Image (cartoon, rainbow over all chains, first blue to last red; front, top):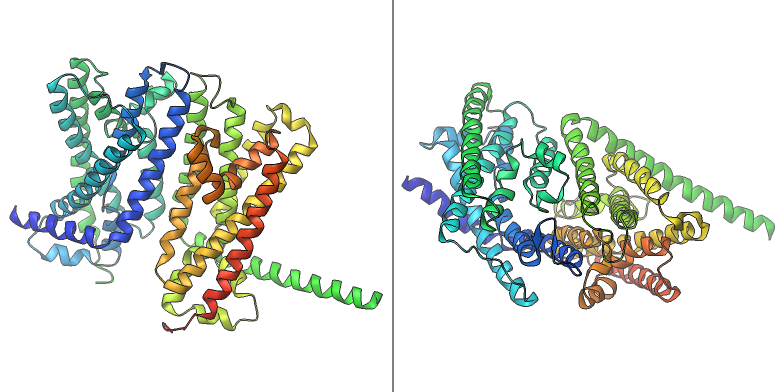
Length: 264
Length: 276
């Protein structure tokens, strides 16, 4: 286990070393946050609530969305396909490490840097714009929220890992990954709460695992769910994690069998 | 006198045709490059279309709960969003080559461009033609046309005229920003990332700029003229842009073009070819 903490530490340092890229990434996230903040502020200017959200709930969703994007979507799994295609995977296979655990801790480093930064941005923005955040009333909500975040993080990692494994069979995984990430972010509620959409579209999107990445944890935080719905949501998260975990394992095994180590 | 004028016209036509031929050749090379990776290109194309569709669905869903966004109806808000897309896609389609200038400078390939009997800026800007953008712009155009049919403003030809003029004006500003970014890359070899910052700031024009408060509107109009590029064309179409703002737009475009071309000449004069 200690070696994986070293992986975490090395990539944490590397992440902070590439400051220009890091700040640019954060700036991009901030632009999304600002544009949606103003969008919802304009919509809620002359009304008490919108699609079941009052002003403080909506602003909390938008700010929370920025933090969850940092925690859940910040990832380095896009490097996996390149590592396979260029034969660098051979180096990992020869080391006494589990590649999935290695990439998970590499991702954790990326996520932790981004989430700390996102938290600072949100605190700064709420201070500058004088926005009121809607905090949970019950202590148990915090516990459920933290569990939901951990579940979202693991779920997104596994799905992204599977996408990275496309590299075993094709050198053209860039386009499908772009499509996957776009769909995932939209359907996760990482741009807007899904309940502004029509009930039919919501029902379709909720059949996918993506709403459990951002929309569900933020609903837990906003205490918009009953205790039964919270438990049900956590169960669904566990179901998706288990299902995709099995798929990831099978895909990895098949991929390593197909791996030709070209370029190494 | 007439002979001289005819000669000048013929020279101008030859100049134009030469540049059109080069663009077509570069576009063909770009197309060949993209069809060499069909799966990846397909993924990017569908991704771009999905992003467009999602935002349109989002906008229409919003208007199920309200009648107006900052005083604009659904077709009007959609027009702002589609105009933003149009300017963004056209800029990517025509100036995509700028995105790769850092690589050209660092690898020393920029030298080859300098010795070719062609304007270097033209060669760099059109070095890459992204055909996925050609395909993406078709649904944007169709949807824009469909949306404008739901607007009373579409019946006035003058609105269409000013829409196109302001959009071209926005393209001139977009071109100037791309040239400035390319110049920075030639000077520093480090600032390719700047183009992505521009792209992100552009996304602030996705919604009508009236949603922003006064200080933010001021920034988007005078400091980073995103509103001039993407919001003003839509406002002109709707007949909500005063003559004074139109004049302001033209001044911004002319000033930014002049400044960026000066900066480009300044940067290329200082290019040392150290990587080659």
